[in-house]
Amino acid sequence: MLKLAVLISGGGSNLKALIEATAHPGFPAKIVCVGADTDAAGLAYATDAGIQSFVVRPADHPNRAAWGTALAAAIREHDVDLVVSAGLMRILPAGFVSEFSPGLINTHPALLPLFPGAHAVRDALAAGATETGVTVHIIDEGVDTGPVLRQATVAVRAGETEAELHERIKQQERPLLVDTVRAIADGSLDLAAAASTAASDATSTAATGTAASAPATKPAATG
Image 1 (tube, rainbow, N blue to C red):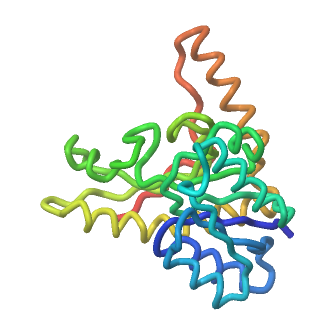
Image 2: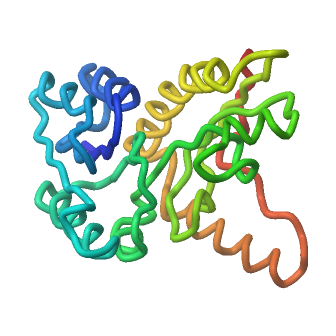
């Protein structure tokens, strides 16, 4: 049984999806703790499910590195196998990433490597993209640069707002995250192998200028 730590900053819709999934008999993972960087509304889902939770506030620490050390210590108490950033609106410090990666994953509302950063949905609309989507990836020390694990595409509708598109992306994000966690837990998706392949591809690309390999799973098209 894969033991999960889930990190959030807001309403916790991805956390809720994971709680519902892990409640089903036979799901090969369980959430052992939920952490947040603020008094996030989504912590109520953990409370209702009887899952231990904690808050580690950046303002309570002298710098990002110290905050990351404290966050890692809080997670370490629960002997977790996988850390899921499910709406944590912070860039994790390098020390934290080096401790947990590749067992550290994130969702991003775009088809990486397109539109990294905090305004991915806005950037996709501004670029006139006809499709975008959601990515689940391993967190590395860059910003949305880690190995891609799973993707799902979402067509951009004419005239829709950033909020409307983002909501449709979220509808794909939740099941994609659940499916990715299931695959990691049952062994059909090997994070260490994915990270190693990505590192080899990066080395090859740097040496030869050839394109990197495709994600572990090709995007699934949705409307």
